[in-house]
Image (cartoon, rainbow, N blue to C red; front, side, top):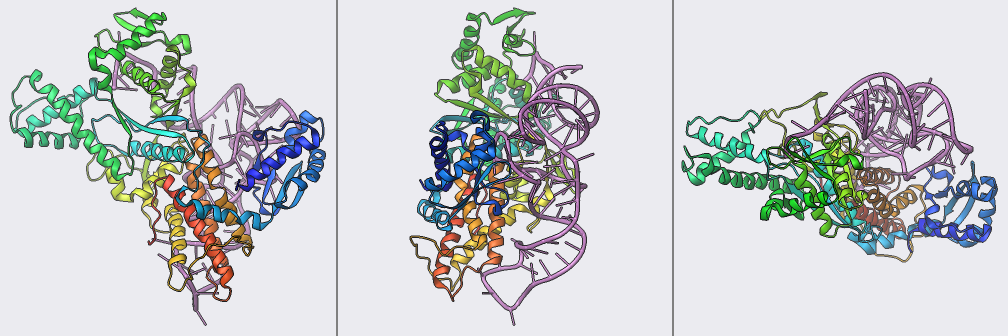
Length: 552
RNA sequence: GCGCCGGUAGCUCAACUGGAUAGAGCAUUUGACUACGAAUCAAAAGGUUACGAGUUCGACUCUUGUCCGGCGCACCA
């Protein structure tokens, strides 16, 4: 047990029982760092929380507790009561700085925890249709989803990243039609490009590739001859581009589940969904269509499973997809969907409930809209291509680090403006560089010529400057921050953490000289702290997929 | 009309899920490079947390009403 705040928690819990005979589970005890360090290193509000149960004033409870606490927490050099009943702890600096050795010891593993208890989680994100390039709207979900997976993984969840490929249905018909039209154009042959087809330049590229491969083989042929081939080739080529773009963006998936998979063997998995619902009397027919009685589970209206054309709606195979996820043994399903799909959340949860799954095991986080902004005005189109700005362009334009940082630094459920000018700047206005520069400074101190070699010591008892104590407390908190970020799926908190850590370090750097030749012992201990801070920063940046540069 | 998400300093955002005097950056003002990178630091100023009512020791946070913005309300995906 190295974490000092855990020790405090336990001491409080034990002390409450001793003083009042009241059971006080750990979850009830909240130990926080007060905003103002003058109030102490840590504080708890337990006295207020017990006031009702004990029928006493918070201040009285706090005062009684302090006496008992002093015996149970030798690490505290002072315990006092303040305000309405807060108990504030001042921890001896030697107890605080013990964390340095823990960090040096764990290295890359510092930040890992078991708080997720190995829960099997499937995170489905991006899942853009293979009918076009990934654009900025996808970039937010990709950065967030990937970082979320890294964080949950770090916090002890068993995470699988999944991309659901919509490679069946109407939009693929359109893809093939659009491709064929472009293909014919290459030979000066007229073939109508449907209005709701795909008009962007990337489809022309796909058509050219088919021309390279097959020449005019498909020209003037009947649709029945070319259709399947164009579909297959189109999907494969578009997926290829998507994979490359994601790769550039440092996002990788463990599973690619194809909608087509659910259509195999006469769509048996989909048929089973419909049959199961029917057996529970949750299916009816009306106007030639097959309906799911979702209103029974609180939906606004019933939903169509099979259209009167005989074709399935998008919903039906997707239900099968979600059932398949549960069948593969995942405890929790997390989906990242665009906010324009929010009405879809309810109906999918209804379907899960109808099929006997706990709807709470399906969690959907909605991604609010992103506006790309430059010079204070929204940029809708790429100047180069005239189409939506792609992930690739964004990466080339502002860099992967800046792009990922910006998307992940703001809460998912608020609309955001992406300031392209700011993201591009390589100066202190840009938070990415502020944070990375802190890391570079840490690295620099340790590797500069003339800096003595660091040798680990038992205790870092010479570290006493308020700045270095604050820095120590910040790095000590990292594993807890990761836990919380994972639990609340609040990726942006890791960004805030990085920023705060950078700030504390810059401040420390300007106030205390690390390498002080007149005091080799202190220098060595400070090198230990900088080492620990560097490990922490590296690990934190890793969690959001931003690089930690040794030189800038 | 109904539903979902927002509204916090001039601007962009935080606030450890109900805690102490609501915090940062930018912009503004003022200081700090003949020692580890000034891509930095130190400081000042900036607020009725959209507005009203409620819940309690305590509310940006929970409930409710109103106003404003975005999104959705398909046998599209």
